[in-house]
Image (tube, rainbow, N blue to C red; front, side):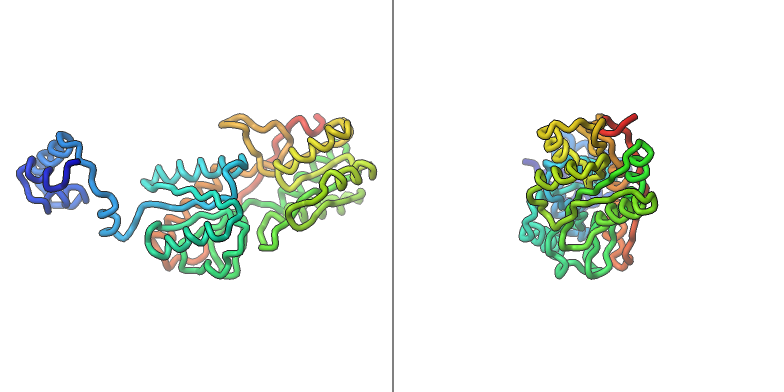
Length: 322
């Protein structure tokens, strides 16, 4: 493998001149640039980016923490984060934490040791003690003890919108199904918005709302069926899929007998929606905002907390009546 010294020898210049060319330093003559560029091409020389990063005190790398790549929402978000980082000449390291706190702490340690520049995190683990204002960290949905930057969507309005749609489509006994984590995050506002809108409509309201994981979901859904519930809002699209399986096993027709609305707007593939009725988060925009904030934090460590709350929309699917 060719070295910088080999390039300098072939181009007839000093090693320092080659280094200046690679780092886009000013003051090099045009014929010198051409000679170095030609030598690099002939030798197929690959600059030592790590050494360059050490000198610049940056790695041009951001970590993305997600619970699992198997969740389509997390996968789509990761895709857009990587695309946006790449457009800004940054690389992404993906961490599938599997809800393992120790794995997330390893990456936080890498930031502290300057092995990566920052972190964008979707995390539900106990890492509060390791998150500080100084750490280049952007959270998705979750709040931390210390005020940090985060990106979320209008979860409360999304819940209200779900209730409004179910009511408009003739549902008269509504229910919410969701779980929550012990660490506060904005997703719980989906339930609050839904519940408030149902209360305003003065129709019966029921809910399954427990600490994750939801146990004995089949029995609980069967209770809702026996109560005559005909419209259900689920905390995520993934929860809708679970409920659909239960309703199918009970031979309950969707949407004729029970209508369902989820939250996330997950896609099966690029530009191919899952097909269910859902409150859609602007996943690409969420990724872009998160990247913009983390890059600003990396370039300016004194930057204060930045909060972005993005609007949601409703997408019609087969789980609600036309």
